[in-house]
Image 1 (spheres, rainbow, N blue to C red):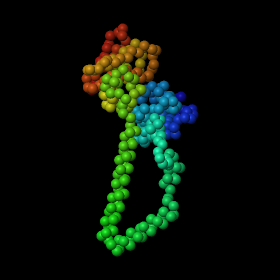
Image 2 (tube, rainbow, N blue to C red):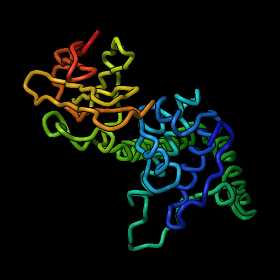
Image 3 (tube, rainbow, N blue to C red):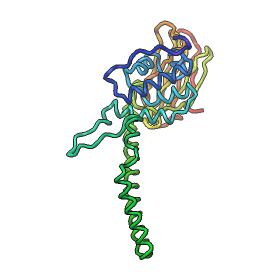
Length: 295
């Protein structure tokens, strides 16, 4: 692709509009970063093939991929993550309407619809409000104490529903965040790129003598960890082990992959500081290097 803006193909016609908007913004962010897909894969530790699926609407991007792209493009992530939550609800079907006894109008999905919802009230409503205000003014003049009490009760009646609505919105926002699909031993042996453990942090890193970069990645919500390494070459071996957990390892046997990022399977990490990673550049040669899970 080079460093110029990519010529993207059309998105699948069945893709929900919220997902199409998200993918379009992700494409724009990728183009603005000036990175090729291979360079983006190296910067985010997400494979080039995964980015091709995300940016062509074939697979819904996980939350950590959106965060990684924002970081690689040096852009704030808040607005795009809010858009991701809406697209996630549409992709999974949680954003679809459910049949009810009454036919409610859907929420506005575009600026044009929003302008209709927020348009000024009809003239008859304005006239009605004016009459109410005039009547209230007369009452205040004639009976100030009693009117003040009524005004207080009306304000309380308006504030209470507002508080309930705010609480319901907070509940909906929490439901849009999917819980992890595994924890501890149930994560062992799984591919970290295909789980919902989307909050990884780097707890330790090491650069081997041959230049290979290794990082221990930990998901606090899943309480599981894994190793990612780059660049790769044939014959090297990585192993991650820990207390009360089955060791996980990967051996690269294919041709040189340049900046390709290799990851081990996940391992239970109830005590992340007790994890240990060992790297062997070639099984037939000495030079095994190990480092702990924190530091």
